[in-house]
Length: 207
Length: 207
DNA sequence: ACAGTTATGTAATAATGTTACCAACTTTCA
DNA sequence: TGAAAGTTGGTAACATTATTACATAACTGT
Image 1 (cartoon, each protein chain N blue to C red):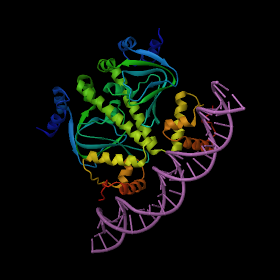
Image 2 (cartoon, each protein chain N blue to C red):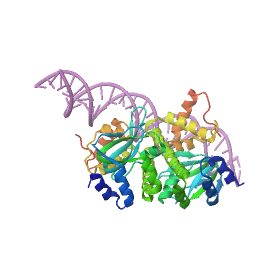
Image 3 (cartoon, rainbow over the protein chains, first blue to last red):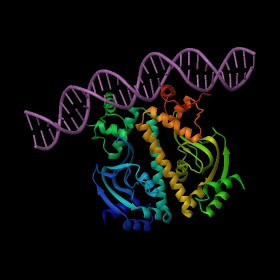
Image 4 (cartoon, chains in turn blue, cyan, red, brown):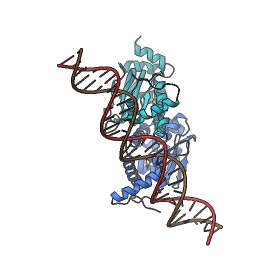
């Protein structure tokens, strides 16, 4: 049994119809990629939509000056709503995507994506669920930027990051944090310093 | 011919199948509402999804302290992606919606919404288009909050507002602008004062 | 050892957010 | 009519966050 096949069974056997699972195995290409690798750049055409079988992908937005802003993570068993969206509309990718943790991804051809929407109720539900969940994630993200102060946002960020990589030790630089949060490195350094004085547990470890 | 019927024909005769148009006329309820009226509150159940036949609706997010943040506008012929999303997922509304300009709205029962997705390709396309377009609108909004300075954001806001209400005269208070932009009234007053000195045309008119 | 790179600390200044208070004006209602 | 209450915008003072510049330490490869 291939790795794709066993992952598929493990994650989706109670979600997708038997027939759909078979089609997926036949029609989808599965790849692996190491942490740090870029999966998709902004503006790039979306020729197939990704579903993460293992690991974590990071989805972020890059502005004209090359600044990054983290939108959300895509974890095991999940799809990327923006890729679905851009793919179905024939639009170039509105996001950049990189591997956060070593990843196994399955790519669904756009044509199949469309066909299955009408053929398999479970697939339609999966796609709509993904759109909705991540849409709401993004809106909650706006809540954070628009309403929360930096110290709260930083704590949320560190907790989420820790949850995603499933470890209390975060091996990242102040600069990386600032980039993903869309703020300045100095701000992060300042806040971490003051947080350290208040909190007894360690948020970040230097290299 | 009813108003609903004529609006439908005008906007959608080249978009939806003849049969779908007939179904819409039979199954959908159409209402009108004056500017200012609340259409949907956050947390409220979504029992039918709206499509704007005439006028403009404003979609915004409210935080725990009651602060507002503008997400996007829904104009003639458009649906509300978040209502679609929450409706299909059986989730309570993640947004608040109010009438920006006197409005005529058609409500599609959730059940029909689902049925038509598989029955009519044009309806599926309409729903997906709406999701995608507004998803990308929201992301661009994040670009603004995360990357742009307040003066740029304010100018963009005023231009967009002016475009939406189709008039160069904006009859709104500094407080309202601040609310929708998720900032403070003093900030807006300060910026408008300095903008007035630079720009020759008038952005806002007092009451 | 050396230059180059990265990560962090620090200071100065600019931009934005927050609170408080004031004056002008409008609306409400007795 | 007129007093009270609410709305709107101006201003000041201060807090928080953003930006830029520079210094130091650790590490990298030659």
